[in-house]
Image 1 (spheres, rainbow, N blue to C red):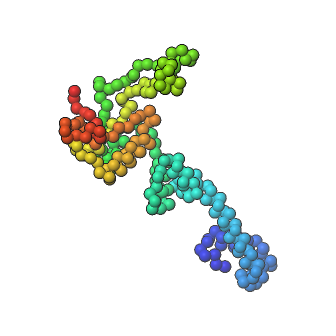
Image 2 (cartoon, one colour):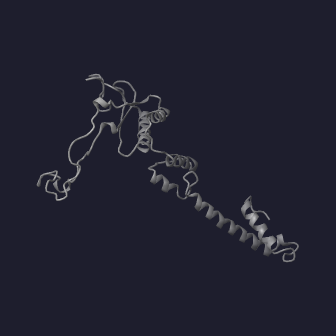
Length: 232
């Protein structure tokens, strides 16, 4: 009996046929209507077993098919229009297994794998901002609101915009392109990929700043795209 290479269906068929014993099957059974019925049952059982296996595989992004779109939404992935299922599964599996990292060396190595011009600017503790003083939330009775009644935003303002801000919780990353140089399309994509990587591996309280050059030269630098640096 030919099952077109479906070994699962063939094994089930052999089991069904052997279960009736020698006396319960005609000599030329493989050409009979009874055997065609048994073959159909075998293929139906095989499909049912595959459905159970397929459902179990949806728990793993590297094997998911029906749930692949769910993982992409969960992990904020936007696959390319021509991406294959295998490529989408690999991207989902990589993002799913990412871990929060605090080692500057490991993060720097990962960024340099994207582009060797990436570097991390370490925070100078002596020149950092550690705390912005003030209350984090309104008092319980609301007797001392953040905004005076009648001012714009008064009904909705119940907490500080940046409570306990610290510049040490900002990841400053530089993709060194040179003074006054605009990033091209490929470099913008690399910067976006780096930002997404940092968003995934850094703790939630960390902010991210990516610039294209350290320092500036008057009439040369594009200050809207670069960070300010250097000794005061």
